[in-house]
Image 1 (tube, rainbow, N blue to C red):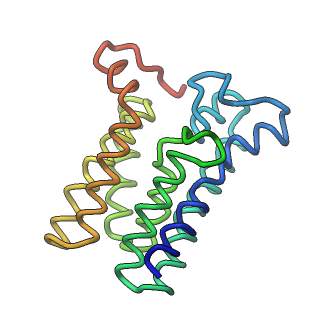
Image 2 (cartoon, rainbow, N blue to C red; image 1 turned 30 degrees about the vertical axis):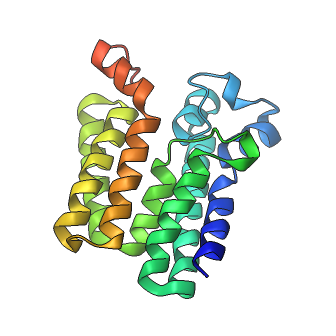
Amino acid sequence: MSLLLAIISYLIGSIPMGFILSEVFFKKDVRTMGSGNIGATNIFRNFGKVPGLLTFLLDFAKGYLAVFIGSRLLDEKGKALALLFVVLGHMYSIFLHFKAGKGISTAFGGILFIDKRIALALLVVFIIIFIIFRIVSLSSISAALLAGILGFYWYGLSLFSIILLIVAILVEIRHKDNIKRLLRGEEKKLF
């Protein structure tokens, strides 16, 4: 059952929502535009607020749905496994040659289903950092770091806290270019 859940979650995560929206509604490949990312921020920059918000909501829904399925198939273990594999799918989509998004929206959707306290804390930190700096990547990186810490704070050494830490590390890895630009003072503000 664990393998089946991993496959289902990975495939849900692999559906490249931003890419699909850009192709269907704008007849453009968003991977050739801006940062080249298929996530909500790059969609927002290139196509506007509504497509950006829709991309966020659809990517968020992938995480929420996968973890919901995980909860039905394997309870607590299922939630944690689904979170990991839906994020992996989003980051390394089988439909886009294993290169896709950075996992923030999808991870947030899954985390919200598992623990609203953690999700709320991450959202607050994201918003505060964004209001101060207006840099989405910095806000995302900060929230991911906090996620790794809060998992252990509230769950101790558990499957969920370990997977949350892995997801946080994966998010940091996917933001490595952003981190380099941040260190050089070259990262773009959203507006």
